[in-house]
Amino acid sequence: MKFTFNALLFLLILWGCQRKPTNENKETNLNDPAQVIINPVLPGDRPDPTVIQIGNEYYASATSNEWAPLFPIYKSKDLLEWELINYVFPEGAPKWAKNNFWAPELSYDEAQGKIYAYYTARDKQSNRLSVAVASSNSPTGIFEDHGPLVAQEVGSIDAYEVRDNDGKIYVLWKEDGNSKGLPTPLWAQEVNEQRTRLLGEPIELFRNDQPWERNLVEGVSVFKENGYFYATYSAGACCDKECNYQTGVARAKKLLGPWEKFSGNPILVDNDDWKCAGHGTVVKKDGDYFMLYHAYNSEGSVYVGREGVLEQLTWTADQWPIFENKATYSREKGMINFSDDFEEGLDPLWQWRVTQDIKFKTGKDGLVLQASEENEKMGSLLVQSTKSTNYYLETSLNIDRSDAKGGILLVGAAHNGFGAPIAGIGIGASKDGLSLFETRNQSESILKEKQIALEGKIGLKMEVTEGHLLRFSFKLEDGTWDTFDHVADASHLVPWGMGFRLGMFAKGKENQRMNFIRTSIVNK
Image (cartoon, rainbow, N blue to C red; front, side, top):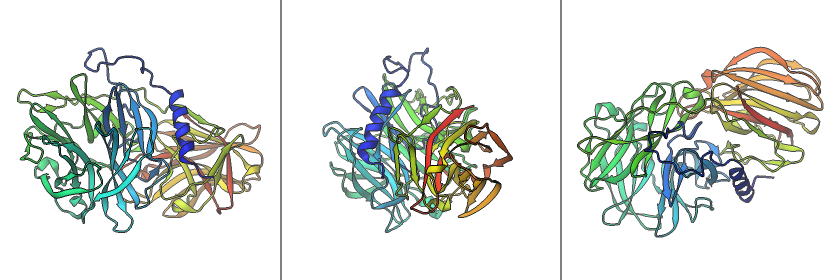
């Protein structure tokens, strides 16, 4: 059976109750010198983070790329510790959209009591990147999709909602001109109160016209203070090994301009612990402003992906917000130890490709994953994002209840460019034996194999070091671990715009299955 929304929502509530923030009963004042921000506040691949306040609580989301469920929603009482409580689209993509699920932006309408989730996705019919919106009566509720609002010829991305001084609501977005070698204007256009239709004509706010901004400006976030509208925005290359992302700020007395850019830009640049920082949202707490943005940590780099970092804004004498650029990597390094026996359903941390109608059963016998030849011939995938560079993934299989090839793998991409198809390295088992493989461009290469008749319960292990070096082991029923004499280097499979994923696969015909009994992720 396919995982249903009601089952997912139940598991999210149960999971959240079991994994509460460590300091949820404390009143946290981020301005207290004794209170240290433990970064990353959103570990792992959490690009383009957004954050809003509703009452005394904060809610955040982040880019999903091509991995469902789409657009996780996190809850916090202090901006520091977050728990996963929902997804905007828990069952996968809206019918009109096919991929590039980027840049969610949450907005709360207090008068309506509604939360709106703007997002970017690519339209199936036009193939254009589009700004769309969905809404719900609660961050934990079901979101109704209202579809695209704007899709310019070169693409429209990175929406942000602002209410002007006269009460009108505007949607801001970036025209994705850099994808065609063109400038990247930031536009504003009025939207109706239901957020279903743009009104009037778009008005350009500003574009990339400064040397440091290079080929684009994007990821705008607007807040009001000192009689000004302030807009933080990002520029440069965000998402690959050669990234040079930085963040600037502009201000205007009126939302529709004219806008003035800060002469001291960029205000957020690389430091010892974080690089390519940007595309975040500014939020106010305890009278001061903080920005939740993404950045690669210097150690994990592109292998882990862009993580959620929180940093306070300070002010110049002439009322410009700036950063001290002193955010550190202060969270204990490593994966959060994880284990799933699948008896009570699928843990909400598991992800699958948004293009696949994933099918599985869970229960006392574990997870029964329906096989396929999808996902660039790697089969059906259930994975999680990495949060560290040193860990191991372990699973136990019941071969007697399986007739497909299945196991564990690290999922990346065929190359580090935009739009590259996924690829992976892993260990697979079937009744005929074991194999280490790399699947790339729909072609499987066998790295090592062991032809042996398998039966009963077996164990598979993938040990990851430095984020990209992989060593594999297996254990027969009632046996000890036996390690393959081979180290695979996955560095050439780092994907554009996201870190590695790791998890389970089942490869074969649709009438075949793989039975996983328990899967664990352990920090080294």
